[in-house]
Image (cartoon, rainbow, N blue to C red; front, side, top):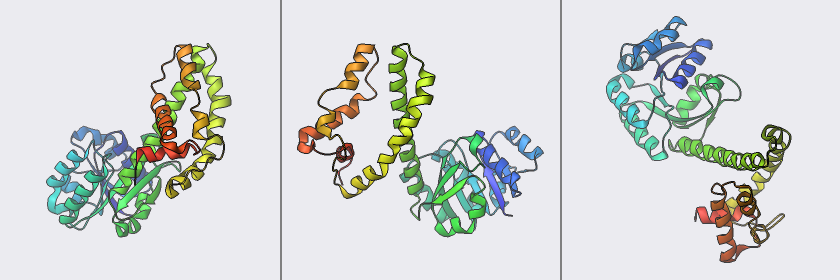
Length: 286
């Protein structure tokens, strides 16, 4: 069993500390509002009187607060107490913020791991939870058993900025899926039909089936070549069927209109024989 400190006891930080306690790890907790630690202390956690005390009490120090600016403030407060420790930052932010914080922590004599939690608090400690890590690969390997307590632990290499990049890329895919759901739900509701039945019986199975196309689209994006396996882009934008339906049903088209315009631009650029994945070239040019 390892000793771990959790700094920041919001909903996620509390879930992390609970998972550590359940796994039998010696767990120290600190929060700016001390009363938030009370339930965890009752369940066996040790209360730290300061961030420095929390850092000095454990091999692994987990930060889970609102933003990187807050982590910088807390690291400044801990200073020498972090020397020789492994700092695991599970705060959402950007790749550049992660790299900047990694440099600061390493200058204090500590190892650094940045993390992206792909789960809600209720999922922590369960098999479906996923946490991405990047930074010190030796630190990840040396404390893998601790990190696995939170969920499936995946190390993305030594670049501290990789975990937040993948975190936000995964969220981008999620929000894209939700945008499609919202548009389809609005269309079905506009016809007075049963949105719940449509979603359960038809939409979810359909989306599961469509995810099978993603690996091939990813391979095309990696190669920069986009042969159409079915309907090419020119066929797909021959007329604005989705937009026409939305307008006829009194449903806003603002969610999907940007994608349709990108598809039309790609065709106008002479790539009408490509598949949909070719649109990635308008979003990022290597």
